Length: 116
Image 1: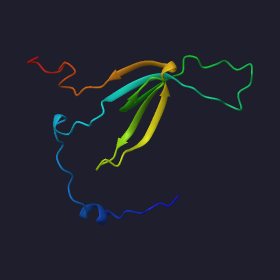
Image 2: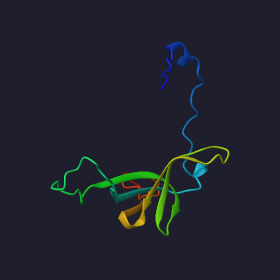
Image 3: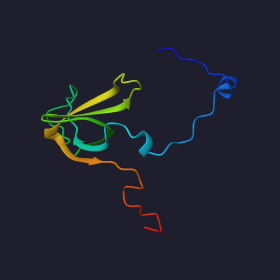
Image 4: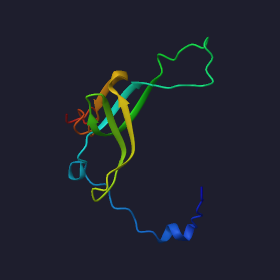
């Protein structure tokens, strides 16, 4: 692994980030979801008398690329210019406990909005 040193002067020369755009204007093609699933693992160091971790639930958030018939596929990153995705996780449907589509706060019910 190669580490790069970034000097403070270099950071000051970078352009300021653009203001946050509204969610509707740049909504990705794939919905953002939360998947709660039972971890599927294999441990070579596990002894036969160890307790199984049947209640070990993993929470994964990502862009839903595919839903079935045997797997859910989530991407952590959507690349620009139709270059694809990075960090894709494939989860067998048989171990999925819950799939929830995440919505922007304005669509989720406006609980904090006194006008709602």
